[in-house]
Length: 321
Image (cartoon, rainbow, N blue to C red; front, side, top):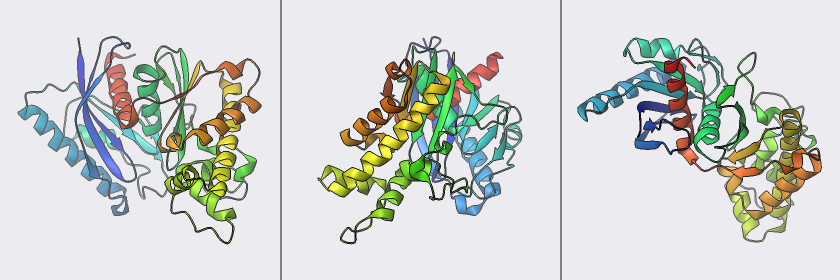
């Protein structure tokens, strides 16, 4: 039996997704996600306007739920940026969302609803969803990695998200790799982070940086993967180098944290067998002997993961857990 239903939001640089999530009383049962919809973020309009559009979207969604006589127990938010979950404030953000830093999201929602509101980082929410209800369920500790336009991560212990002293725990894309040396990372450094050469956009960056004169530039990571699948040797080599370097970084994270399982999600994990083989090779090369047995699992929940994780976060907050 499903015991709690939450209105959830996933705020990204391109879109704000929403869904109604009903969570089961036990983690082993599947949640239900319904009434999914989205609006464009319109990031260029600035943080104040994004906040206003988010709240207006929420009000519209709450009215629709009321019209359907659907009871909502709380609001869960998965937000881009570094989140101060206790205060409901965006503590830090990149230029992907100009003016997003400092936005007081919980305060804005309190002005329009009496429902409990909980906010966590979007990658953290994704990790919670996968760890508790998705590919990581049944594992005591889970390292979740989101590999898309950027690279993020989350560490979940006994169903709880580890956020760290400053809320930045899980920034897996900012682990150092020799392959990334000299490439500009989204955080502003060129010291060698893995994100600018192993994310979706990073695959294209690496491909275009070293491409032979007779090879056309790739528009994005998807095109690199398509060219590799069609047999282009250069694209295949780029995928292998990128995935192996990422695997070595994942091994370093696993050596430090020793999780029971590692879940990988996002567009990059669809890169194909060449990518997965090189990732596993890099992981095996870098992992300590006992850590090598840690399973590398592809995520199951897709875009529903952060919505489910946000619902879990607000249910946990309601219960004071």
